[in-house]
Length: 65
Length: 420
Image (cartoon, rainbow over all chains, first blue to last red; front, side):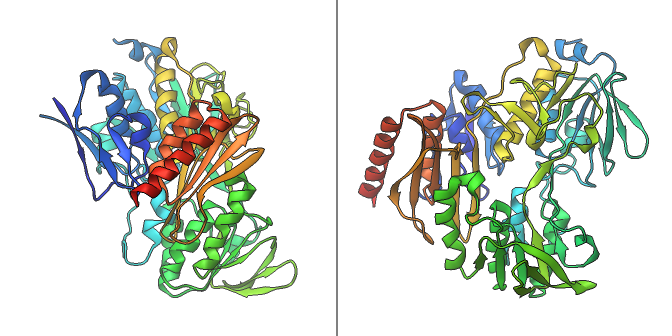
């Protein structure tokens, strides 16, 4: 199972992840990233990995647990 | 040998340009399983680093004092050791030989390529012929520029910024964290028209004066004054503005001079097809340097972080596996941070009408505006409304009709108020 981890210190609330995988990531009114769910479904893996790789502040990781 | 390895034959996969797009190109090459040699050629004496912080965090007081290395991507050593990339930094490419399939470098050496991604970016326009003759006058593109401007701010310099675009505005914002006396000089009557349109460009300009910056619009700089070091700028109407630090930020031009005579089509960048292909066998382009047909938005050359990153990856994949090449389309997105306000824009600012949905522009205030062209919503602006931006980006990307977009944005605005 792959789990998404957010580094809150680095996250800039820019929303690129939300654009690429909106079922997992949402930016709130204050620019805080909300993880809608943190366990990655197998069929979403590509989208989530793209979101992780595309983060402008390198704040996202996927951990295999 | 895998499919992607066969494409380059015995010659390496070469990327010219070692910033964001170039980095993403070499990363993507490894991601799709290319195991051959990769050469990354760059003008700067650094491994790839991130540019947005140069005018923002790294320039602000108290955030990063004494920092001397640029904000590298990922970990040190990642490019050379992790990705197994041969880095040729500090040596600009000066010519491209598409018949001989090689890139000629400034030191006279030739680098053969099996396939090539060009990501040479853009370079700042120069407003003065004589700028280099006075100290204290800086462009703003590379890490050294940021460091030099920061050093001036540390000394308590009075700052004149020429150009009230995104970079000039961010430099003004960061300079105010040092309590610097800042004058922002813009040749147009309304700033940021190309990026945000006149309605929003005019509204956000007020943020400068609210934050103690003197903003001069429709003002042309005639000359720089000083002996050895800059002492003032002189406007064409005669006004003298004393300044010991001058930052020029009047836009950039695509870095294509080195490609003259190469056979590549150049017209405000390297002219490519939808797949970022130049039309020359094995040669693709990405980042600020590429002009390509972007779906509903038509032919564009973007200067945004997200498009540079994505184009780098797409160009590399298309170069290495042309049989599965795909078009790159994006709903453009950029952000800018001024005085603690976040500005975000998605889509196109070329509009028949701009409508404010909520709030009003002002320090710390929240505002959203939609842009209409014909019967569709083609763009959206958000000030301090980060929760709206990506929903509006998706809406614009879908080609949503104007009435439907208004209903959506107004409904979101009501939900926001209900949450307060």
